[in-house]
Amino acid sequence: MAGKALFSDTSLSTNNLSCASCHTGYGAYKASFAQPYPHAVDMATDLYGMKTVHADEMVQLCMVTPMAGKPLDWKSKELAALVAYVEGEQKGFKAHLAKAPCAAKNPCAARNPCAAKNPCAAKNPCAAKNPCAANNPCAAKNPCAAKNPCAARK
Image (spheres, helix red, strand yellow):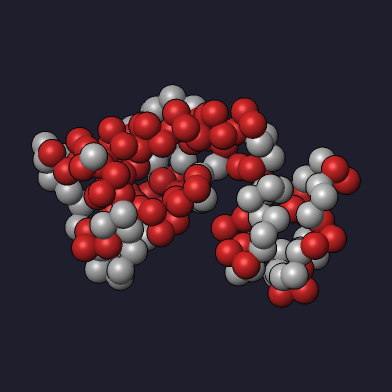
């Protein structure tokens, strides 16, 4: 699948990032990603003043910021493949949200330096802001809790 390969291709950037650097396991997607395009995306609004974006525009924005690369040609097979892959990711994200409704609401998820070390992270992506926290059997088992800069946020 060309789109999946491009999604992980760091050569598209000038800073060794790929789309997957931020979006592995649905990371860095907000709940709005589940909405059909065009829709509002904070990054597009904050950095470029765009109130809504289409999927191809969002891919291009990510190519420029944060990947610090050049935008792909609008008629290229590469852009078409990436957009198709992102649209597939969007479908998977919708299913993911249905199973874990707190996942896209956790402001600490992308900033938790311990996530890779926390064996419970995948079981409870909502951590401190999870209304279901009392039901999390991993809550007391997190060896990274003291190192998590977001843990104290309520």
